[in-house]
Length: 160
View: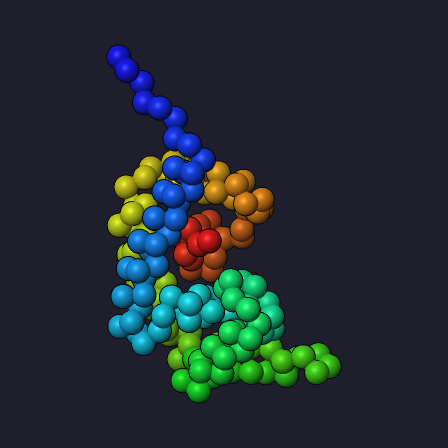
């Protein structure tokens, strides 16, 4: 019996990138029904987890520059999805509006559907192992469970 060759690091990296691209394309297509992009929904998701986040914190969490996050936040404020609130000193914080919370929740269901298509066939222990390995690969610690699904991260699982 001939064994399969172990994948190279490049093969693994490409597989992760292809899965991410598949998620990104499907998510943007489906989230458009709510009038938001994946990046906008990701801002809503993070504000749902971290109310009163600063612009800089949101930029880091969503893989954007401070400048691009500032422009995005302005558009989201104009659309009534988020609002600016005063923070300590001169700090400005951001918070979900009721409309933003509605879109965040509806978007979470859409994202769950996108992820079920690619990862839903994995057994629970395989999914946990994949998650552990991905966290190990980029040096992160286990995230806290989300409010949507205690014990599971309901967010965008493979985001890089």
